[in-house]
Length: 476
Image 1 (tube, helix red, strand yellow):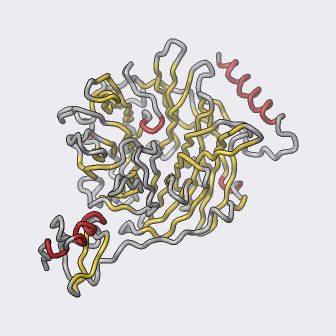
Image 2 (cartoon, helix red, strand yellow; image 1 turned 60 degrees about the vertical axis):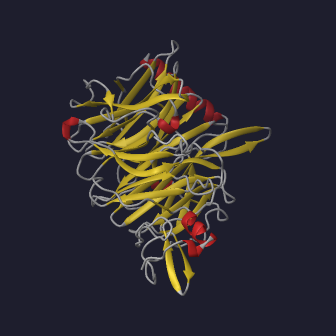
Image 3 (cartoon, rainbow, N blue to C red; image 1 turned 90 degrees about the vertical axis):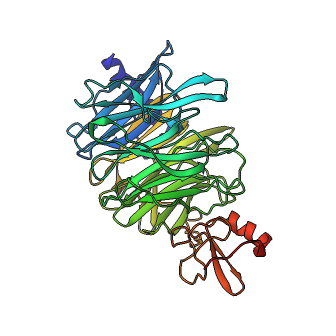
C-alpha cells in the first residue's frame, strides 16, 4: 500500500505538470495526505508544544465508517509522519465549519474535539454536542470521550467550535451553544478552558446571540490576552464580525464589539467563519462577507479592538485562514473561484502581508476544485498550506520568500475604516434605553439631546430612544 501511495503521488504531480507546459511550477508540489480510497475532508493545522506543525483530518471509508487522524511534522524529512488514529463516535458530524480538531497543551498533552449528532423531534438539525478525548502519551492511548460541558443542561446544539493553546499552556475552546430562548434566531457564543488533567472547566458566556452556523476563531497574543472572534447577529440581520477580549488567559471577558463594518444584511447563515491571530499589542483578522464589497477581507486591530486598517483581498475568495510568521508577517490562505471556458474551478491563493505590501502566490495546479485551506508556520520562513480537493487532502510547504507576485492592485487597496466612537465628550454615562453603563469598550453610537451627548450600547437602543426621547430618563 505504501508503494502504491508513492506511485500515485508521483503520477499525480507529473500528469498535472505535463498539462501546464511552459508554466513555472516552482512550489506546485502538492503532497497527497489522505487515503486515495477514502473520502477525506476537514483538514486542520495547529502546532505542538515545540511549535512544530500538527495536522488532522477525517476520512470516510467505503463501508461508511468515519476515521479521525493526526500527524506530526518531521523536521528532519520536512514532511508529515504517518497518521495516527484518534477515537471518535460513530455519530460524529463531518462538516468543514465544525470539523474535528486537535490541540496540544504546553506539557504535550493532546486534546481532540469532535461534534456528535442524534436525531431530535425538537430540531430538524438534530441534537448535537462537542465531545473530547485526551492523550497523555503522544496519541498512543486516549481517555474515554465526554462532553465539553457534562454537567450543563443540554437541550439543543453545541457546535462550530475552535481551539488553541493559551499562553499558560492550557487549551481554550470557543463554540456556539444551545439557545434557551427558542424565539431567538441566534445562538450564544461560549468559551471554556482546560484545567490540568481534568479536562474542560465550566463555560463562560461570550455573547448571548450570534450567527447560528459559522465557526468561531481564537487567538492569544503571548501576554495572556485572548480574543474570540465570530460572525455576529446584529440588529437588522446584519452578519458582521465581532470580537471579545480577555486579559487573563480566558478567565473573564469584556463585552463583545463588532469591528468589520461590512453591514452585510442577509436572512440566513453564511456558514463561513473568520480567522484571527495576535502578537503582543497587535491583532490581525481575516473574514468573508457577501456585502456590497464582497469577498475575503483582512483587517488590523489595536489593543482596544478598533480596526486600524481594512483591505479587500479577493472578491471571489471564500473560507479564509491566516497565520503569523516569526518575523510578524502575515500569511493568508483562501480558495478563489474562477471560470475557464464553460467550467468553474477553485484555486488556493496565499497572500503574504508585510506592512502595507501584499504579495500573492497560487499553490494549486489549474483545473483544481480546491477549498477550505488552512495554514501554519513550519520554521522562520517556511509555511504549510493544506486543503481539500475532490475528497482528498493535500498539503505543500512554501518558502515565504517565493511569495513575490504583487497582489491585484484594485482589490488590495486599503478601504476607509469607520472608527469606533471614542469615550471622551459624553455627558451621560448610562444607555437611557437599557440602563447599561457606557464606557470606552461598550459605546457603539451617540446622539445629542438637550445639549447633552448621550452614549448607547447598540444602534437598536439609539433607534428606540430617537422614536420618543422624552419617554426615557437620562441619567447623568
